Image 1 (cartoon, rainbow, N blue to C red):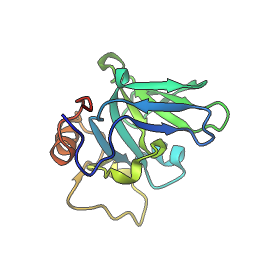
Image 2: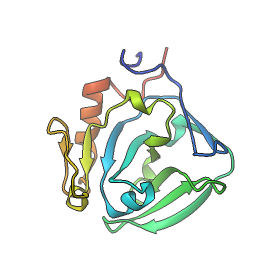
Image 3: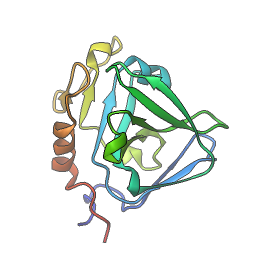
Image 4: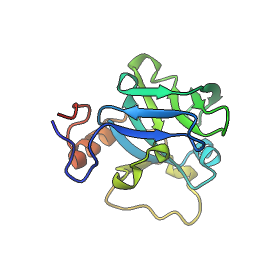
Length: 166
């Protein structure tokens, strides 16, 4: 299956801020959403972080990385992969995702992120004053019980995730 006509062709590339860590995403992500938890606000130094769930097998990472493990607002832990030179986060892998083969790519690091819109917002009970969410996308006060709705919304907008570009 081909990409959605509005999206750039796969593979998509991205990097840390200094470019020492590069990656290539070979298949469509499962979803893209914004997280407003207090940790994503601190990590991004902004109102929220953008997170893209991808299959770990679909991403190729080059360059040296380090891992820092931290607690999450949901009570789980997450491994934060970052560049040791500039400190930019590349991906997170939460304890609830380790067995699934999924990880959360920090979507702002994609070279093509301007072409892709988030389909939802999570952890809105921690949102910053002044945030005005799009009523046409999904909203969750905290951590969703599962990401099925976000995955379905992304598939509905951009087509079935995970198919290789022909």
